[in-house]
Image (cartoon, rainbow, N blue to C red; front, side):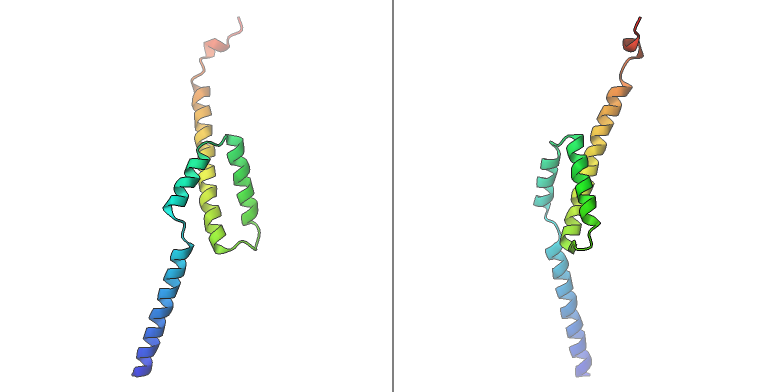
Length: 104
């Protein structure tokens, strides 16, 4: 019976270590806010280049778990920035009056 108790304690201890390890790998909210602030000022081309860099990094097999998580988050933010800028341009194009384009 004591052996089962020790085994249960060992399993609980291992689960706690795994949980703490996951917490240590998570990205802090402050980091996310800093990234958003940095990305908010980028042009479409700059955001797209950064996104392409991240995709290329993720294709490497040597990327560790923490970097994968950070790259994923950054990639999502760069993609969102590109989409926002494309939507702005789309609205501007939609608002162009066809009469203004008449050459006569």
